[in-house]
Length: 250
Image 1: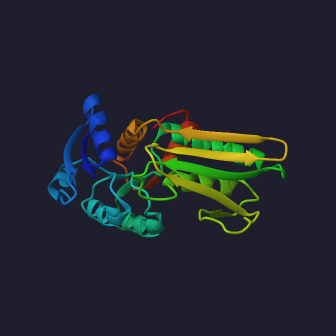
Image 2: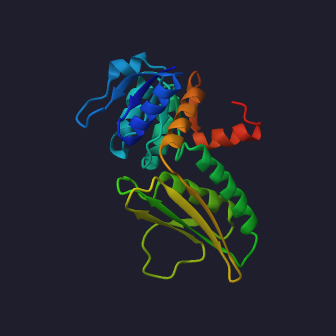
Image 3: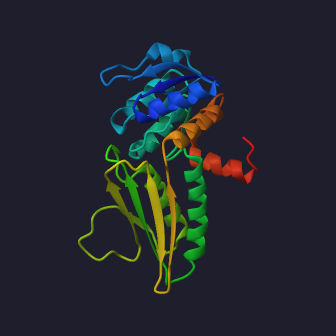
C-alpha cells in the first residue's frame, strides 16, 4: 500500500519508523515535513491512502483537499470535532472515504469497551459517583484530549445520573448530573486516562497509560488497511468494536 503522510511531527516520524521497519507498506509522500512546507498534491495523487497527524488549525482544509482528490483518508488529528457535520457532508458529497479516531491505540480501544461495561454496571448503584482525569505532555495541543472526550461520551451514554460533560475549572459545587473530566498538561507523559468510581464504602479506579507512540501508529496503519477500497465516513472506535463482536474479522 502506498501511503502519503500529512504532518511530520512526533507522530509522523513514529509512523515512518513503523512503516519502514515492517516492510509491508511504502511511504511515497510526506507533506509539511518542515513547518513552512506546503501540502504535496502530486504525492497525494500517487497514494493509496493518506494518513494525517497535523493540527486542528489546518485539518479541515487538508480534509477538503484529500477528499477532493478522491483519496481514502485516516485522520489521527484531534480537536476538530466541532466541524464533524461539515466533514461528514464533504465526504458523502464527494463519495469519499474517511476514518477518524480519538485514539488509534488497540489498548485504548479495549479500555473504551471496559469503561462502557463498567459504567453500565456501576451506574445501577446510587451510591457511586464517577469522574475522570487525564494527563498529557506539555506539547499536547488540545485539552481535553479526544480520548478524554470519547471516554466522557461513553460514560454519559451508559451512566444514567450523568448527562453533561464539565471540563472547566469549577468555582462552585458540581451538580449531580455533571461529569467532571480534569486535564493536566506538563512533562513528557504520552497519555494517561483514569476513570474513578467512588462511593462512601470504596473506590474503583480504571486507567490506561500509553508508554509511547507506537501503539497509535500501529492502529493508524490498521485503519489505513481498513479504509482502502471502501467508501463512507467511519469512526475507528466503532470499527474496532464491530471487529471484536465478529471475532476479529476485518
